[in-house]
Amino acid sequence: TNPWFSPGAAIYLYEASPTITACTLRGDGGALYGITVAGDQVGNSAPTITNNTLTGFREAGISISAQAGLYEGNRLDGNGTGIYAYYSSPNPVIRANSYSNNGRTVVLFGMIDSAVVWDASDNATYRIDWPSIAAGGSLAINPGSHIDLAGEIALGANGSLTLGTGSTVQAGAGAGLRIYGTLNAEGVTFTAL
Image (cartoon, rainbow, N blue to C red; front, side):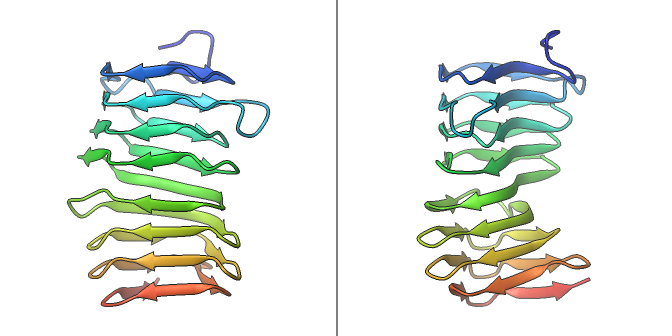
């Protein structure tokens, strides 16, 4: 655990853009985060985090707070959340990661203004908290996913949301979809709680 950052991350990147590749980070249930990416200014960090294994972190294997970067080919196993992402411009690129035994696969909030694809397999569970998809932005979620809406998704004009076939969307109290753009959903089950 990094003693200089409370509540603790194995690696804390503050307005830094290193490359972290082929490393193993283990939280063993003690540390909150494997890798935290943060900064005072939006997008000042743009690390390349690829092909790592992050296991056993109580909150998240990777936590991205309003920063950019590439997060690809990582194995996230046994964490509270695989990747926690607060999107802002420029959006982080999160792709081709593998997720298993996490409480949730990806937690999202913030603004999406580019093409974002969530491609986790094996019945991924996503939690979406009050994001907006701006004009020209898009979010595509793979088939068979479970999406917990904890807030409203605001889909702007010329924005698009694609929910994969066989997915389920569960909306909590006060949560839902506000659509001004394009919603693509076929064979999706929507449930309001």
